[in-house]
Length: 151
Image 1: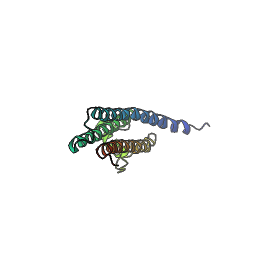
Image 2 (image 1 turned 120 degrees about the vertical axis):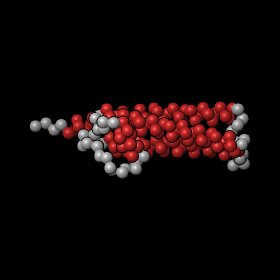
Image 3 (image 1 turned 45 degrees about the vertical axis):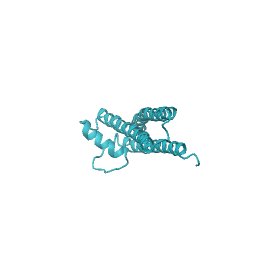
Image 4 (image 1 turned 180 degrees about the vertical axis):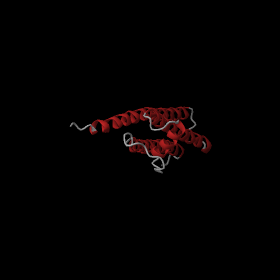
């Protein structure tokens, strides 16, 4: 008798890796928008000039990242619905948000066939939150350097 478990393992891993690649592409959009915003503001001479202008730039960067994370959670939720794990998007989105943020309530558990998607989504969320934090830190660092030339 042939063992079919490797195939059962490879399908959710392949689906999860495809979702991760999609979320990386999605996350590239706010990174690009943030870079373009900082470059434009610098070209216009508004970087490091006034506190509230700098705060606006940081706020925009944070909002870009937040929207990307919410869209990425939705992508995972739609994947869960497509895989037949949830019948409604609302429950899938909640479960996805719990996974993505590594909150891990455990109040909803996926079937054994697709359970591996949970840790893959958590790893994806943790890595992309790290990218967002690095992006926001880089923006703040640029603003501080522009404002305080003695640093």
